Length: 530
Image 1: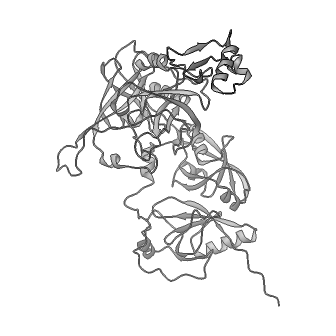
Image 2: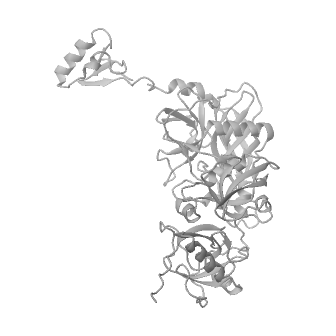
Image 3: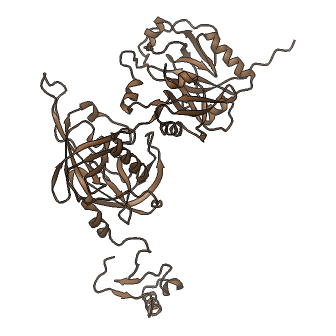
């Protein structure tokens, strides 16, 4: 703490009680007796002007200068030359500054280049040495699509870098530069700061090299939509250009890799997210050893099991992950896994969400046998699946979107609905899936069967958050596939007679995959007296 030279500094030992009493009398303040004995933490009492001020409690650094001086030489600026991807630059995620959050483009081009080569752009991020022989950790999105990568150290030296390996799933990458005796830092995997402990982020926001910001750990295990990372939330300000840089504890150990920010405006609002050191250490070691990360894959779309959905399946308060779709010809389908199955454990490890199941499956390698504990039809069984190789995240994303078959699901300009078939079921009028209904509601060819919702009134889940609408296709009801309106009616009757308050319906909307929605079942009307 900086102290005015004219201030009276009083020792917490000899003479403290006299000074405290004199100060109290002069200011009218009531001073606890324990403070006269040196304070609850043994701190010194300092008189600056007339206001009493106390030194920080033990553990609160008076300056981060020593930490920064020690670790900053290991942090580098990364400058990337790549082709302009206008669609990626315009991509936005509401509330979250979409990856790459830290790219600072210094170039551009038009959508129509008239046959000329695509324009180039310059962007920048951060990284840090993890070995003396030139291995550097950064984010995958910093170097994604790079044609040339240049690394600049704190002392201004420039190096050409090559990509050793990268992993979309965790947004990590490892680079290599030629040389030796580079200053480096280490991941701290044995211990971690507590929530509320100080941390320091070092990087190159907005191309301002060797910038340090300080804050605290705000939370652990933040789920921000990534399958393989539970992020550390920190409140040390990080901005565009900080991505790929390290977050240090007060001992100068790397506890995370800065990756994302929460930002409605694009600038820092004080909420940042870092990849934990244990995840980063494991991934970077594999990238250095093998150049890539391989994960198991079963070819199933899964969703978390809400309490309402669990109740509609008759599972009570059981937790798990529900299978929505299986990839035709994929490992899950070959093993007999079905839409509507609820997975409660993978290889004996309980799972309570789709993310947990994805991570457990991904721990396997192609060819491994994965044991799935599954609830189906009120009974538990074990299904053994031979794992395949998980495709890249980009390939998985594209696999769910087929531009040739897609419709946007917007039926606002559609022709008048087909005549309803039979009485309303669960408040809906339904019709078979035909060529006309495909045209009417832009239903893609990937939807092979089911019945089409022609009209729906107040057909929502228990929370009213998810409602069915015209053009939706119901492909499953409970544990039964739906090919006709009669199939749906029969399944609803069976669920009602079993005393269930709701039935899970498997629904396809537009080109999206199947989603299960628990829809309330009205009780049967009492029989009239004879």
